[in-house]
Length: 180
Image 1 (cartoon, rainbow, N blue to C red):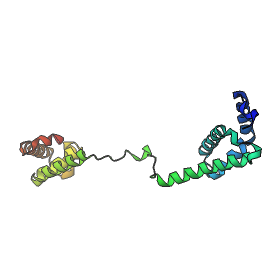
Image 2: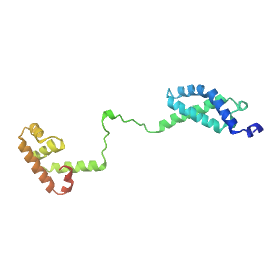
Image 3: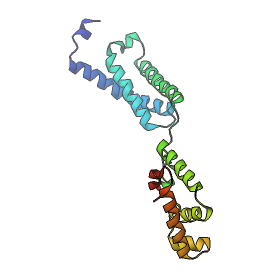
Image 4: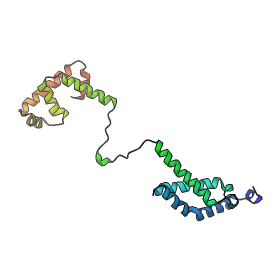
């Protein structure tokens, strides 16, 4: 280290970094934009990181030790390549587009609940099970279910009433609150 470098003040260091930035920023940005295939945000991040490294290693950035631009370009190149390598090892992420509905989230409790309900419905007589499925599980009114099944509305009401009563009195009926 020369006596000039040892006596550098923060203002001298700031001036050197500013000169490096002014002289090499645009060529470095153009280069990193090409390397990142047009990803301007990533290219800006790489340029910023490159200048932070230049500030940390300012003592190496002298024309006597080699091309300053070459050093900056190599650092930027290495940062971009590190980014590509990291992307290969990370799992692919897909952004959720809300226009396609909500994501499916079945917890183990939901799966168990559906299994219990299905088993309990299987214990019902076919006509009662059909009435429960057509009304409660399909979110239809009694009138809509009656039209769907081709029976009077009173018949649907009766079948749903007796089906729920059977479910409530069945062993393990505390789980039937899911239906009622």
